[in-house]
Length: 340
Image (cartoon, rainbow, N blue to C red; front, side, top):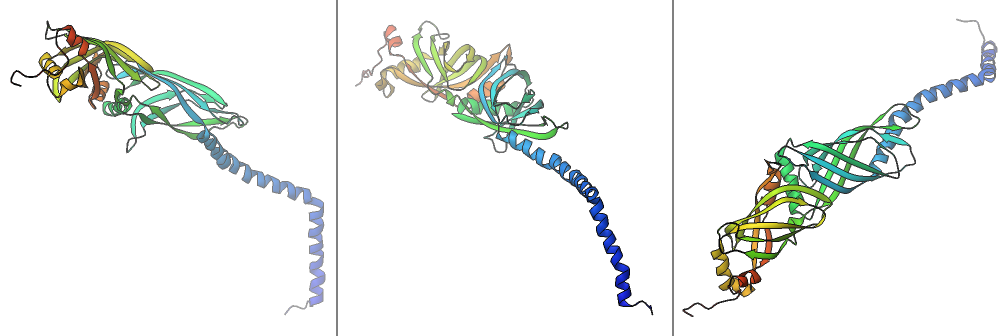
């Protein structure tokens, strides 16, 4: 058993505690410095690795993409030139640069999402408003997907297009880049199945079975797209029966109203009968036709994505043939049969 008494033990430990207190008083600054170093080592990397990337992605998510115009030109079977004029509005309180990246274009209305093209986006900087203009050749690697996009564009009143791509963002004052995802969906006006399509000044020739009809076709384009379609052939239907072909050459649609010369090969007997016999004679020469895409050729190449899109849904058009018929001596009114 130890011979040390309790009061002796206290006298031996007391100087140790006093020595520690004295040490802290003398070197408090060293402990504070060490704490700050440890805090810096722990906190700063956490900010750089977690908080800053999250903030960068949030700023990119908050940016607004507006499509001002799109041109689809120099169209070939497997390629075309796609030009996009757009504006990005963003918070410019943080000075940042977004790397160039490859973006995939999706038909957002499809389920599941349908990728139909890839396009290279240029480097951009954070600004309250910045124009981003792109023009490049696009390879059509998936004809089915691009046809689905073209069909939606031509037949619907509006479509959703999603742009998505992975890139990096550089924030001023920080040397390292941060990975971010550019992901925006925009709504574009479509051509609404050529709603408002009309033909004026129709002319009929009774001398030939081909090239016996012509007129001026008016095609509205409510979208912001320019579409270089090319030489287009439509199949004509009347009363559910095929009655010929209509040809529109060099068909390029600009935003707004477009006017073209159209010629046609029309079977005349069904039309003459309709002008003079019930029930269509009651329309006083204003006959309803349907058009369906039959063929599209541009730059000497067939464009299946436009051809099939135009064939996906019939376009309705009413043609006033009363004056053209009158010029041929055919009355655009009901004529009683000889047995009546």
